[in-house]
Length: 248
Image (tube, rainbow, N blue to C red; front, side, top):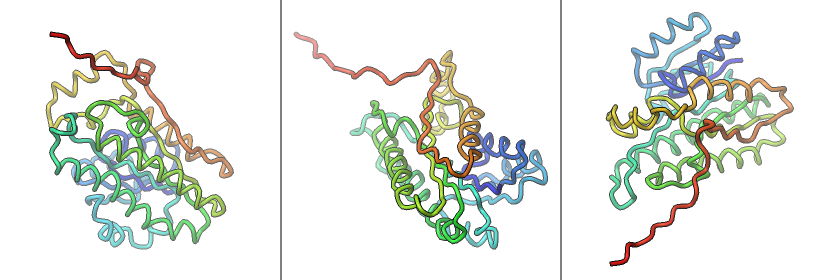
């Protein structure tokens, strides 16, 4: 298979690339950080067909750089995404909300739309979106991030409704707490906060997500996995919070 992976320079994306290459598949990797992409390409060797040091939001340039490989992609892994901040909605920065919507929704939609015609023409393809349990379970501070992942979940299901007779599979992978640079980005570089989140939590690892993606992608063609929701054993849907005012 030829697998196109976004957000591939670290975390889930890099782990997914390593897993597919280990199992003798080829990968095309997209991320903004050219130095990390080059290092990963050297590590993966000949199975890394191409690296694209490009912003996922620039779909036009991605199309140009892919050239004739655009109609050869078997699996599209929409992994690029981010969360910014954990403040209550009234304290949030509007620019952060806009950036999450731009990256997690609009970029994913535009890139998916780019590949769909070629998959339909070939009557073959698999779109794997990296969602989140935040798309199902609300939590304080999740506001726009959770809403973007709820979109990804429903978008994935609606694509399946369109593709049931076109031999195109669609899967949404929905991780819970997982170790990656995700929290460092969310806390805007505050390493202490990011480390505290994972401390003694036995969180999922990027390799766990990669295993889930690979399993869904390599099942027999007649099987479509709609959703995979996975959490560390230490995490579960929380009880509903109730705020009780103190009586004076």
